[in-house]
Length: 98
Length: 394
Image (cartoon, rainbow over all chains, first blue to last red; front, side):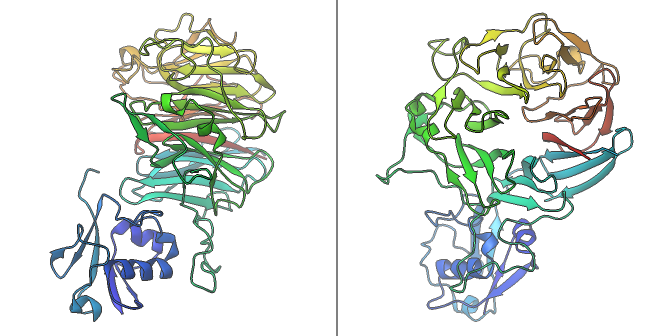
């Protein structure tokens, strides 16, 4: 299971805790992790990536194992520690005003 | 005994204020959707317990919320607790927060609009500014969005589809965003002709359909906007709000960027009725529930100074449908008041003694239970108020 850490406002939408766990089918990439997240929590569709383009929303960032993956390809294969669940995949809201 | 429910959308959540018909003691419930911008909430005339809310965020996009119990509990349409949210194949049953512009059969963008620098710019969905439930079907709701377009749901908010005739009728390239963005902010449903709808856009103007939303025409003759190269152009006017009385839908009142206007022929022609107002800039305008010729505005100093003249918060009432205005001040702050009142932040109830409500960017919500003669603050310290609506309950 892949662990995903969600920002506060997405937790309230998903009615979840700070982290959720999802089963990812196939290769564990940014895209497949988000596919699994949206399948388990369909109310999050459109909140992390655009409905049509599937691109990351501008004020969100992705991190894994201390690395900023925000500008990487959505097809980037994630580190083994993310695949195994040892480390969470982080979805973080940009610090940009209040 | 009759009661009222006031729906308040703010910069940091939603609030539901309730009172009996006296409107002197209030219960305050909320915040709902804490930390999110609530642009607008409105109840269904067909089922007062059905309320829709526009929940938005620059980070996470657009969410539609719905209550089926008068605002006590909320859910995203299609994601009601205890009910299945996905189909057997794992796909979501609904996409209540998906607003996709019609690209016509060609698959290409329907049109472009004018950007701040005069160049053409593609339409980009940002948020829902206004939700207008149908008069007779609680599952049908119209949504006015930024960038300006009109959407409709017929399944209680589970899915939304654009009424593309509005953007597609030809003047789209001349529309432009105002300082607050290019939003479709006003939707007026004709109570006597179900095929007639009026909408208003900043900055494009007022449009009307007479066939349920298929075809639209601009109705801005008589408006004058000196910031435009052609001040009397067919479109491009920064209309801030329009209002009508349900029993007299051919008479429209408008608070334009500058100028208070009136039309007596369903928008075909407009004339200025600013009269003796201290300034004719402002955002809100509304009509008394029982007196179709009694209207209310709140003058704001100017487009550069978004606060009341002289630091005095004054509602102005005209019982003559414009031109002759009287200030209403009793109970309102008359010094050191520098708040703004945004375009969707005034409403009226329909109790025998008509109540008038408005919210401020300073977090106050005021009520006058006697048509404007006397005012009280229901609450004084909410987040900045975006919108106020009221339901009269029996």
